Amino acid sequence: MAEQDVPSSVAHRLVIKFLMKEGVILSEIFTRLQAQFGDDCLSQPRVIRWPKSFREGRDRVENEPHARQPRTCVSPNNVLNIGELIRVNRRITVLELSQEVGIRVKSVEELLHNELVVSKASERWVPWLLTTEHRERGLVAVTQLLQKYEREGAEILDSNVISDETWVHYFTPESKERLSSASTPILHTPAPPPPPRQK
Image (tube, rainbow, N blue to C red; front, side, top):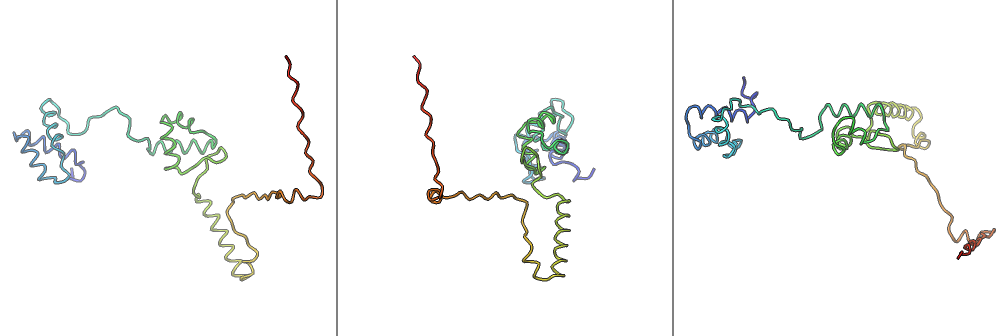
């Protein structure tokens, strides 16, 4: 097995196990590990712990399998599952995604915003960034515009308006001055009197 295929933690443990079987004392094992691995050397308490484990009957130098949850839920499998669920139903909620995939709501939110780069708009999940199809359509439109510019010259610049697809609702309310000087007076009807109190 090549040296680069062995994780450094396993290499440390192999050396510790070998030196322990040779009868080398703990302080000498730590000194030799420092000489071999330099700054990447295990700490002294960790070096001391491994010979004890080997004396108690541990034979493996690899980490034992454990049942704890992974430190992060950002796995390729979860990203694919959530992405597929969003493609099938763009109105799915974060809570529903969390229940479907079996991870926390906070983890689902991190996946949506950091990995899939989508946000909720009008109750639907939409991508923040342009897809390849959007980019290709934009390229075709710009190419056509450039060809039209080459044919017609600078006149085309006066006839084109370019913007994104943001809707801007424009409304200018009339000022109070204008309303007060209007030719037709604005009639205010008084509020009806309150109903009489019953005893």
